Image (cartoon, rainbow, N blue to C red; front, side, top):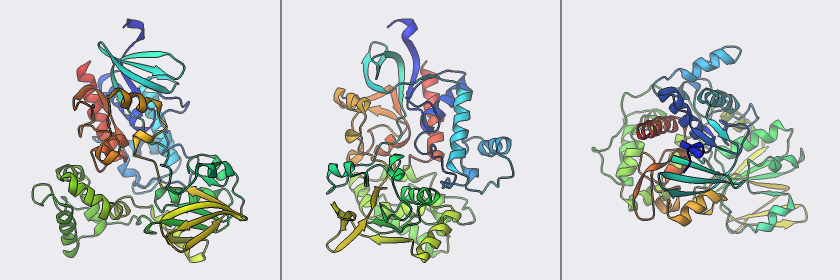
Length: 441
């Protein structure tokens, strides 16, 4: 390893997770990381690169500080950079948050290598990170901050449908909306936050045709509303049996005492991962089968303004919501034919997969991950989701060894945690990983 090629810390991924890690290293320790990401707009990532001002954060501005020790950090940035007055309870456009992260990236000033990492292997004293152009970076420590990957392929949908220009596997591909005519009937697969974003983008682009949202339960996320914050979680580890049923009963008991359900859900944020880690694997599987979607509907709520728009669309008949599992999509004379269940058939000019990012990293279109999997440096997490790691992000290899120089942050930790995609969790992870990286240099 030669000194000119050597980097103390290489962060792979330039979205929120990578940016916050680099920012913590710079502001807390005066360290400059090397950030590998092909984008010329580091900081934005997938979540905050939307150009639409109608795509709002689903957390009020007061909850989006990059610094867990400084709750008003984002609010001060808004006051200094956005004209007018923004209330701390306002749900601001995600594009604004992207600009905030871009500012943090500028402050961190990492060495930005505008390439895609396609390989990583151990060498004496660290790692060799191979880039798409063949260049190799040598690093003492590496952080995988890869973020989200494209949705998983849906069963029963032939790959050749992609060639029709009517089926769109990835809702965030700009081509998904480019050819939708104003009066086209559109079917969105899924009823989560991605579906809401796509509906708003369609309307913003002048689309006025009927939109059908289809999912197994036909349920959108709930809406945000004011409540009185609880002083403590409604139940905690240690005083509740470690089973999915016990957790459900403890939560329902709080509601029966008159606790607002929003207050109850949000009170659990500080302890939810500890509760999850306490569950045996069989109970985690039971929770995922029976309770996870119900939890997500309550936990990942819509801004009130967005909820009002959906209510208006449904009342006007321009948005219909159906419950059913997609079993097949085929071509027809008037577009695509979507079949769900035994007897549901929907005809649409365009069908957009809004099921959200895939957590099955072994199937992702990511040469870097495939290389690390093949070398045994990483293994999938629980039930094949994310990556196997310690709760604080140290990756675990195929031999069961815990790395002290290879970490992950953000969605990949869903291989071991229940919550790991929202800024309130990621900002803490970034701070803690930065502490470990700095101490090891």
